[in-house]
Length: 108
Image (cartoon, rainbow, N blue to C red; front, side, top):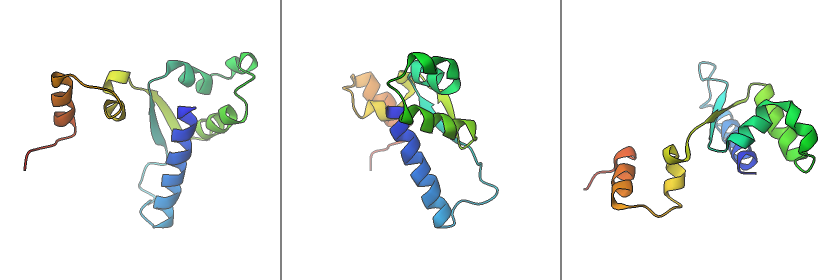
């Protein structure tokens, strides 16, 4: 479900950038979605799982169509490398410092 919501948000953002003329012909046409769920990636890339996953109907097809037509590319990124996850989970002192460094935050 998170992949579906990310796909919808990215699609909206791409359309918005196109509407305000910030999306040019030189811009890449494929948007990369970083996902840490290998099961979700396998479902999107391989249709053979579809028969076993009957409860994932319309949502699955929408994301699959977006990947098949080249609008999006789904890539695996480990959970430890996801910056957004760090805003949702408690961090150790070292983890906090790594987050500050990755976000390029400095004291003013």
